[in-house]
Image 1 (cartoon, rainbow, N blue to C red):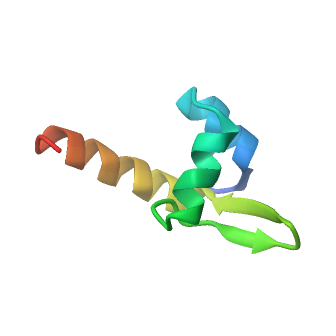
Image 2: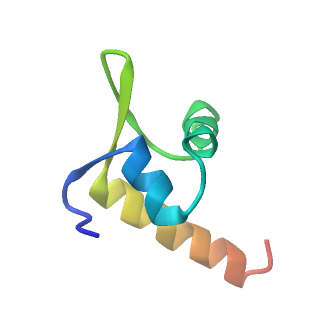
Image 3: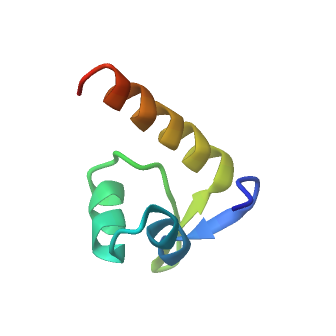
Length: 63
């Protein structure tokens, strides 16, 4: 997956193998950074990569 682009909620959900509902929940809780465009959300690829790296670190620390 190319991380330097703008991703849709569906693309992020497919990459993580979770439902779009899970991604919307993460966005609403401000756990996953997203940009609101009209009534849709978009996720910056670099922000997604950083978020993934943070999640890996959290898991490695025992969270």
